Image (cartoon, rainbow, N blue to C red; front, side, top):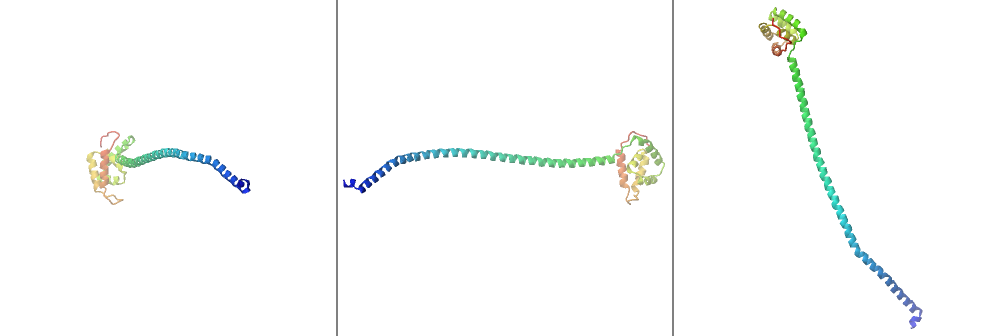
Length: 203
């Protein structure tokens, strides 16, 4: 009883009451924290599942994009191959065109065509040359343009043309010092390919 009446006793009892009250107030809070702690794993698991779903979707999208990228690269390689092939074919076609143009020019050069306005003069020249000896005609043909010589010879009889070409084959070009045999051969080919405007009786 003295303890209850003394100041130290009252202070001790007050301290015990304070501790008890504090404990009583803390216990419900601890229980609430325990409940919250129990629920955390479930929420975390849900978040993990959501993140796992999102990761799978992103991975699938990445795979699709990678596949599309590879397909585009394959298509691009195919297009480049086709372009390269087209370029090679175009280059080859250009070469063929050049060759055809050269062949056409060569044929045009070889094929002599007589124009209508030339007929009278060519016939007159043929008559004149027919009265000359082959060596004199070759001397003139040496200075005459080759196609003109072909046209004149086309109006002469074969028995006159033969000796002229034979004499030309033995002659020498005074300008180059070379034989005129090649020129005689070209004239022979051009006579063979000659396209007269109309048939005339050789003189």
